[in-house]
Image 1 (spheres, rainbow, N blue to C red):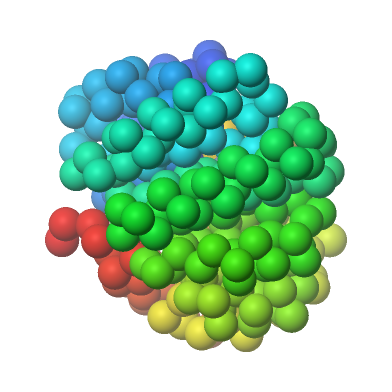
Image 2 (cartoon, rainbow, N blue to C red):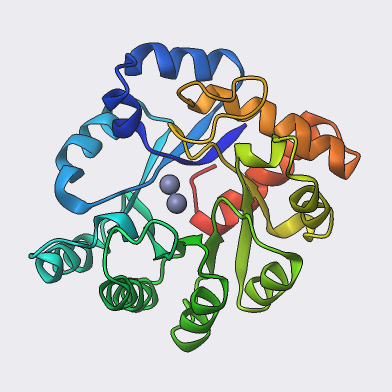
Length: 256
Ligand SMILES: [Zn+2]
Ligand SMILES: [Zn+2]
């Protein structure tokens, strides 16, 4: 079973022991986790984790929340410089967050476009964050379409946005929020996603699924989200894990 989107160093900041977190994930059958970058600043530390834990794959990028920095251009240049590194399976996360607005919109747009260009140049997929920015996210991806596709991660929008993303070669990834009581619309969307474009993630330490909602999320909890999505699709958790494993292996060119 794969957790296609997690932030290991952010979990550590919540004062959990990574060793325990990884052991618990292994115990429930998590065989791979993609550690998604917030910024290139902690690249060295993340490399060390990936060296220590063979099931960890890495991405590199600047999160929309991390864009408000005077040296943004230098950070993007670092992403560009390291993008071809064999250990990097995707560029991101990048995208637009019109909900929190931690960084000015023009700055987020600039960083998003630049990272899509990097993804195109290095032939890697891109991980896209979208909060309250449906149409702008789609418009930018339409303008700078990553040739190797990508993922609309923690998908929380309507089916029309999923359909437009699918047309642009994006995969759709569901996180713990699909297990929430008030997410019935999102569950209907999930039922309509083609099985070969579906991913599952935790976005840990955020968005812990029911029955762990409110706790610090960890990759091991991905099991609960798999169970809910599998139930929606009328397959077993193991069947869904196989489907997502195949999809992630294809999209991120993971070693089998
Ligand atoms: Zn995100
Ligand atoms: Zn994330």
